[in-house]
Image 1 (tube, rainbow over the protein chains, first blue to last red):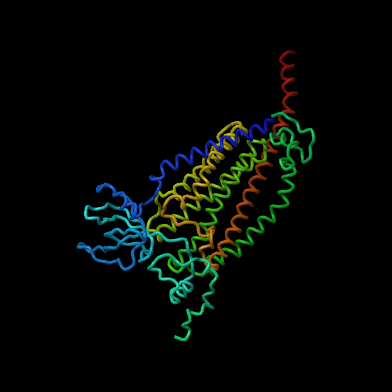
Image 2: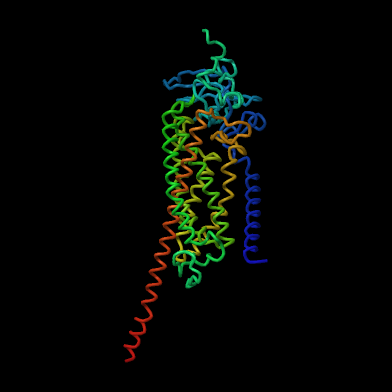
Length: 174
Length: 277
């Protein structure tokens, strides 16, 4: 075995050792590496009432009520859902521009004894789709997609759609 | 360090540590590398400028806005290529470091040394543009989610490598330490890439390399790919230019050393003789 060959093997073995050590560590700390917890996680294991944590999911369709707090600040009530479970959230403050029904959000706050999550911070989370406004309009008009109800349809159905030649969803006459 | 190059394949290189590799690998020969690189460099730089001259106006002015992010989406055309380069460049650093450690490839050492400042720069740009994008869209400059944190670690790895290889008086020792750091840091690469799939994060999952179809409309995807190609060519041109400069710098230092050595013995003897007489 030449010295080069030996160095190669030493390096490979070190790599395997380091890789598996990292994998084991990451698996062990899995729960601490998540940025937010979903409503289903909360339903499964309710966190301690005084502990602040992040709750994430989609803003439930039709659940958003914008209000004004007594001191004049904007406030909002909405429900965060992951499909299986939903948690009511109250928030006083300015919501991010991307906030809307069907949008992903991550909220930081505490769960009250009444099961309402009092958020001190709301962050918007956007999905991995990007499309021109005309394409989004065409999808909405044709009834293929309602952004308030969740994620866009499979990208293969629209990512080569030519908005100029899109048939305006068969309503070109209107 | 006094290994004289007995087979000067390229221009004279006596005394450089790089010269020792000449017999082992065709492309480890710095002379051959310099000649090849000198021929490639103008084409690489020209191609980078040309592709960016097409890609940037297309991306920043002609491509459509996003339906919900509006014009802010244009940060994508800088942010995403920088993120790809930060990771691709680091993969290159790891490969170069492995070659340097296993085959003692001297040019690989030099290339790694010149690669890391550029890598740190693109990673910093990735973080900065991401932060500028996060504020208007997410509502925050920074969060400690798995993706953002692992990219910050990647930035520190780049900086650490750049600092470590320059921290030793013995350049060869510094290069070896840097190579070990680069290889250890490579475990961070899959973490950066898959952080958005393994854990829930504020950062959205991958758009372009999805299993089914890219989640971007072609009017946004194509300018992005052209920009990515242009920035990659520019990155390569920059690293190649730095590596050439480093090889030439070493050669000059070696020639100066050799000249000093030639001058020294006679002087020394004359001084001694003068003292004896």
